[in-house]
Image (cartoon, rainbow, N blue to C red; front, side, top):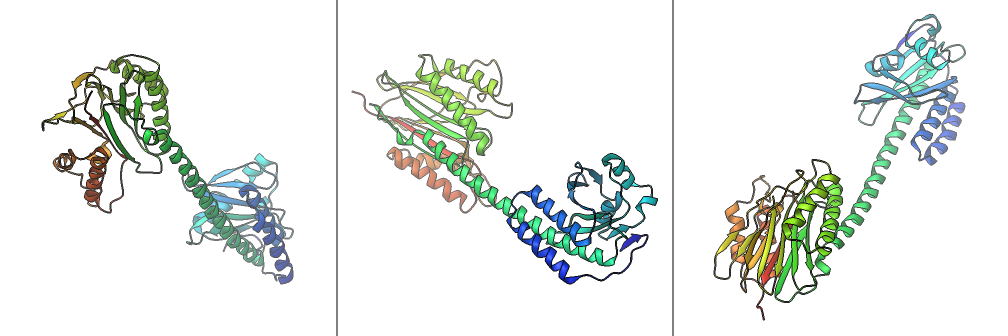
Length: 425
C-alpha cells in the first residue's frame, strides 16, 4: 500500500458493514440509470468508510485519462493517469493514500481551488473488471481521524462490488441495445423489401420480367424497380448504393423516390432523367455516397429499348439467335460528380431476346478462400441458364453463385433482374 501520514490499523464493525451493503444492494439492484447508479455506489463507499465524500474515477483508454463520472457536489473533472492519488492508484494498481494532504502541494490543492472543496485526507483503491484489468479508481476524501488499513479493505470491497455492478450493467445495456438495433433493423428490412416491386409486378403485354434481391446485411444498398407506364411502355432499373447497412438503405429509398418522380411525372428521354437524378443525388448526399445505376426504357410495341449505364456492372443482352451483346457503362456513377450530362444507347429487341442485369455482389461473390468468382464461370452460369423461363433463370444463377461461395458469408448485396421480349401482336 502506497501511503503517507498516519495510516493505522483499525477494527471493522461487521454488523455495520453488513447493514450498509445490504441496504445499498437493494437500491443498486433496482437502478437502471448509469449516472444514478454511480451516485448510489459512491454513497455506499462514503458510508462504509465514514468519509465526507467518495469519487468514482473511470478510465478513458482513448485519452489515457481518468474521468469523474460522478464527483459528489462537483463538476466533471479529467486527470491524466499517474496524476494525483487516483491517477497514481490506476498507474500502479496499488492503493494510494495520505492523511496529510493539507500539508502537501499537489493536485488536490489544484482541484480544491477549482471546486471550493478542502481536502485533508484521501484514500484511493483500484477498480478492476472481471478480467483483472483496471477500469478506474474508487477514492474517498476526508475522514475524521484519517483513513486506516481497515478503511482500505472496506473501500477495496466496495470497489470490487462496484466494478462488478458497473460491468454487469454495461453488458446488460449492450445486450438491450443489440436487441433494440436488431428489432429496428428487422423493421427497416421489412420496409425496404416493400419498396421493391416483387409484389406489384403488374403484367405488361409483350414483356416477361423476373428478379431477385438478397441483401448481405439486414438491410442493403441494392435496389431495382419495374414501372409500367400509361403508354404501355416499361421502365426497369437496377442500382447499387456505395456501402451497406442503414446509410445505404436510406440513400436507396431516396434515390428510388426521386426516380419514381422523374419517370412518372415527365416524358423525358432516359439520359435526361439520369442527368437530373445525378444533380439531385449529388446535392443531397456526401461525396462518399453514390450509386451505380442501369436504367432501361422499353417499348414492347416497337421492341425499342433505350438505356443508360451509369457505372454499373455490364448487363448482357442474349439474342434469340445466340449472339451476346455487352451493354458497357458509358458514364460514371450517379451522384459522384456534379454537372454531368449522361448519354443513352438504343437497341431493338426481337421476340425471345433477354436482358440480364446484375449487381457485382453476384458477379464478384467470394468463397471461403477469399477468391472471386471467375468471370468466365459467372458468364457460363448465365449462358447455361439463358433459355430457361425467367424465374428459373434467376434462381439458377443465384444457386450457381451460392455453390461457388460455399459456406463463406455473403460479402455484398446480390441482385439480378431479367427482361425478355415476348411475342408482339
